[in-house]
Amino acid sequence: MTLNVGKENNMSYSFPIRLYKYFNYYFNASNGKGHGVHSPFVFSFISSILNSKELSEEAASANKYHALVNRMIAFYKPAAVMELEAASSIQEYALKEIGEAEAIGLFYLKQNKKADDLMLYFNAAIKKINTQSILIFDSIHSSKEMEASWEQMKMHKEVKLTIDLHKLGIVFFRQEQLEKENFTIRF
Image (cartoon, rainbow, N blue to C red; front, side):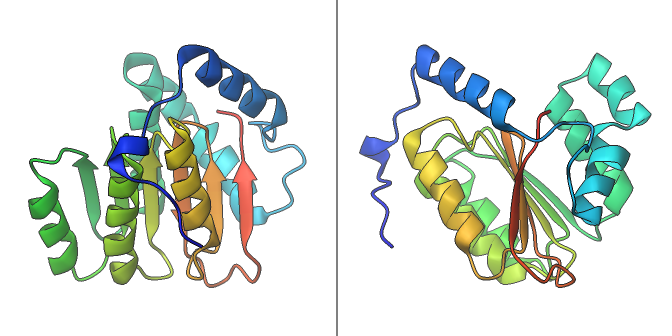
């Protein structure tokens, strides 16, 4: 499948469309308390991370998505953490860092609005993943092209589980996960 995700086509959604997309997400997402979620891993993610007291306390004084990533780091204790802000000035350096990494424990790409950059970082990171790796991507619903890239990531053969929190997309590669699952959870 080929996606038309060039820079010239990567226009962010207008405010009314973003609002519509958020309400659509909010009313169609699984309950943020874990009710009706049949995956033990995802239920644990919801109860131990999304609904943790520590996340609530940190989110009160900081950005809730930054607090969520910090809580995931504290909970999963990944061996190596890479947090990158998408900027063309550091892209070459960032891709070099990913390439030189032995393995990626947790990779967080924030403030990215370009679908081609999203796939560039995903394709670089996927070469360094293992069964415990977690990839987190910001702004997955900011444009039609970003949503198409998110869908392309979800279909990748190595991806076992995804969690869509509307602003963040979280990708897991758990080999214990026998069937591919994609969850949309209210956060």
